[in-house]
Each structure stands twice: as structure tokens, then as C-alpha cells.
Length: 273
Image 1: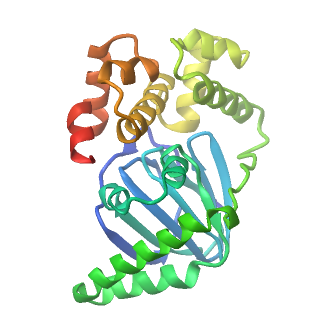
Image 2: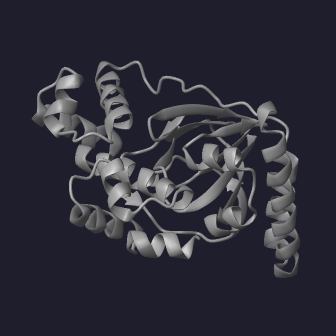
């Protein structure tokens, strides 16, 4: 496999409605955006990291997930090729799919399907062939999600596989696990490092080398991803959302949210209501 070079950056640009086919290469940094994403592996195999999970996707498999959680293709086999689709979260919510399915998707669940690839490839072809076909592609994707929501019990959630057996990487995975389990608490960097059996300075350096961002940034990302979910799925006051996500002040919550999402929490809720 070809491994990505770690870069101290996360891409947060939004794509809107977009379909594409082509070679897949390792990503030099993670993506984080506010769309629903579908990846179908037409050929080859890729190792895909999303939040605390590392999932191996093989030929014929499709991954579906909310892209607000940082994600990155870290390894690929030569000549790996995928069909790639993103659609606005507002569309997904406007379809008013069953509440339990929406909660699973926005709660961070990744679906891995084995029998939907040809449809994704066809949508990507039509999308790039003619702008006149794009409304039809949108309707077909909506129908696909409606069937998926009804038959979601037949979809399998892929179990994470170890990213590496290296000693240092196990420490990083420990820190990721601590953060994803406890980000709602008033968690500190020394606590995270201590939980992984490391001193804070070494823990911060090791995490940045492996993930390309600081421990504190990763912690904030988990809190903001949870805030997005609560803002969309509940009517809780903003102050309750802030404290439920681990922020110790409303001001810090607003500042962090606006930095990551380029809008206030209230505007985010209104824009997607």
C-alpha cells in the first residue's frame, strides 16, 4: 500500500452536491465537511480512518457516513479506483427519513454495503455527463436512501481494524479512544496523556506527528461534531448544548463553533431546520 504523508492541517471546505470517479490516492490531511458522503471502491483496497475508527474497504464495498467527523484515506493499493458522492446535509434532513436512521447517521455510524456499487458508479457517470441529468441523479439518490432507511437492518457496520501494530501508534489509538469516550467531560491534556501512560509533552508531540493536529484541536473537533448533532436532533437551548458537549463556558463554545463552522450555533440550527 501507499501511505499518506501526515500534514498538520484539516480541510474543512464544503463540496455541495458532487459526484466523481477516478483514482484514489492517500490523502495528505483529513477532510471535515458538512455533507453526507458515499465512497464505492470500484477497484483495489483502501485503509480509511474516521474519528477513532480505522476501516479497511475492499473492492465492491460502499461506505456511507456523515463527513462532519474528520476522515482520511491513509493507505491504498496500487491503481485503487472509487466512485465518490457527497450531498448537502440539508437535502438529507429534508427527506425526513425515519428518525432512528437519521440518529444513527448523525450519531457517527458508518454503513458498509456490499451490493450498491453499480448505482453509485452510474450516478457519477450521469453527473459528469450532463448538468441536465443531475436532478434525476438527485431523485435516484433520495430513493436509494429511503430504501436504505427501511432496510437498514440488512446493512453491516464494519468493525474497526488496527491501523498499525507499532508501539507508538497504539499509544495514539489509546488517546483517541480516551477523547472519543470522554470528550463531554472537562478533560485536560495531562489526563489524556496519563491515560495512555505518557508524559504530556511527549503525548502532544506523538499525537501531532501521527494525526497531523494537536490533541486539543482533536478534542475540540469531537465536541463540535457532537454539538452539530445535538443542534440538528434536539430543541435544547444553546447553553445546554454547550455544557452537554464538554464546554465549560458558552463563550468558549461560540468561539470554537464559529471557528470550525464559519457560523454561530444558532445560525447553524436555523440554516438546517
